[in-house]
Image (cartoon, rainbow, N blue to C red; front, side):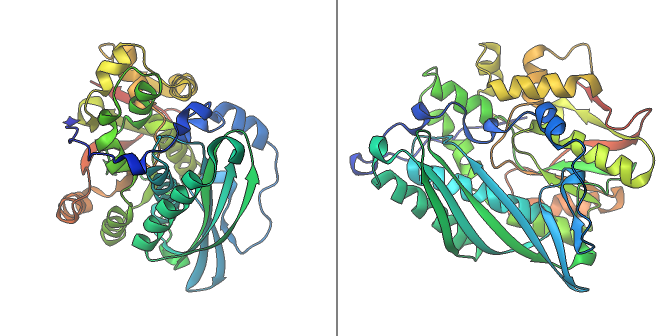
Length: 368
């Protein structure tokens, strides 16, 4: 289903800023190192031997979990990326919401943030930098936390992000390794931000097409996480730079390893919520490089219906920034979760598929 693009609010001359995206090679989470290259770099690195580390890098989860005592653990994450929009205030808001999302995806509560900025001061000056910081602070305030410090360096390409610490009861962690056969898959935001921002960056579309995407990228996943926690979800992850197929694949491989049995998924393309105009831009060849890399990596484990076109397949791999939560929930909790998400007003509450038993870990069957 498509989500209509609302009319954007007018931008005053006083709030105009230099075009940040012209200085960035990649936009937002599309700047991630590819999954293939990342796995090569991480292969053979020792898993944390510290017994306090309940969740480390070995499961490709959204955040690390460090146990402090039986009823308290830290949730720690970091997210930094180049500009995805040209408005500096919105860039800060998006970066903050994206970083906070990892805490919510684990079922945690944000506690504090530190900022990191790399900035071309000679090119852009400090006014847009101040706007980035103000935007990030506004989102952190909405989340109930402060940015208590940070670090800055000079760079030719702007980059900004947050180190976020949260808390959680270690007995209530929602990792990406708990999905079970029969679970339903629910997505809480539309996809397509990578395609939309690429269309604008290449001057193929006006900035007005980004209004719905900016609203989504600056919306905290807090409400979705609260509904997820209340429903007793088995697993969750947020959809960001590796796209829907990539992050679902991580969940399936981690869950397979935890369960000791090959776990896969069945996905319905028609059920996936999509921003307006995205499919048209893909047909016109407006596709981020990160999205193409994502599909190349995911394709060997994806069994697409023959009727699905290349643009449709690319959409499922589109590199998202500050995307929604993908939640694996028991079937008997599904109706309650969807109703709760709708009551809370999340941007989507779409049942897009289910967890299955397959012949090898991570196989995703995609129907039309």
